[in-house]
Image: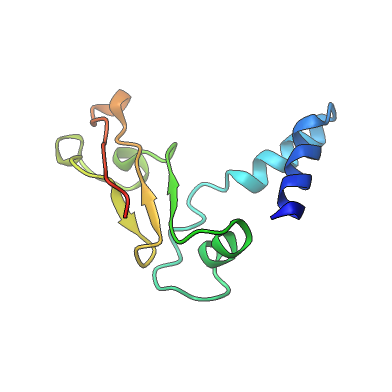
Length: 105
């Protein structure tokens, strides 16, 4: 965890645009977890959980309406996927979805 904190601190403290682009690219690979249907020790979800600690990743900015194909009127709860290891919470309000409230385990 200390290694991750150091790397993030260096990236955020940099005035080099290339460093920022690299950092943003590594932290926001949209759809990176969708292929991890079943838990696998080498998939991106497992690697992220192992590196940062925890059992579940929670994310937004990939709206359920646009990026997961849920019709706006059907957005009622967060979407749990990748073998129950990832929760998408962005209901896509600006796309006609709803703000989601969910109780995490």
